Image (cartoon, one colour):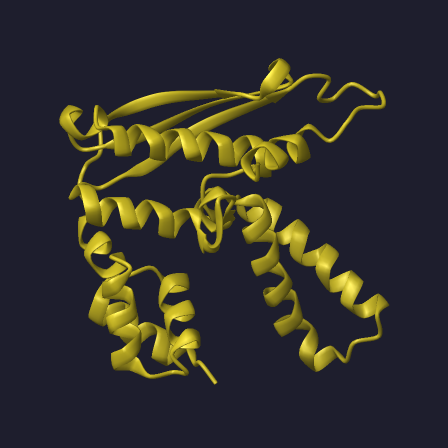
Length: 215
């Protein structure tokens, strides 16, 4: 069983994110040293050391789905104009824009989710668990587990990357931080879909984006 103390110790030793540490421990059966090696192999420990550095350069990248049905603008920041002009960085920004088009996140990261939204979600999840007849003593744990699913669906950084679902968008960015040697962050994005908010029958354009990715 992976405990909070194990995650905390790994995080203190590597500086990697909490969820990255938890996944590394789970994949190594709780072996701390192997988990450290896994984080280093993925570049996550190295990336964490750069996370506090100012990233004020970068690019605003667009992605328009075929026929103009979905459009995305995303600001991806790095530390220098030099890195912003590299082909690898531009491809990363484009992939992130495509991710937003296909997966339709609402937030960049869980830190952006307001406490009001979280509490409302907890109330709904708790009511669902009670309706399912779950015992009171396990409901709080169930709610937190289901809240993790909420973050994975709604927060860009925690979504599975559409081109390689074995990694999250955050892990994808960390890999590029390790390769390019600079802190990289997603600052903001906007996504438009034709007919969004208008009551009418429409196709699943996000599914079309996924189909295009998988061709």
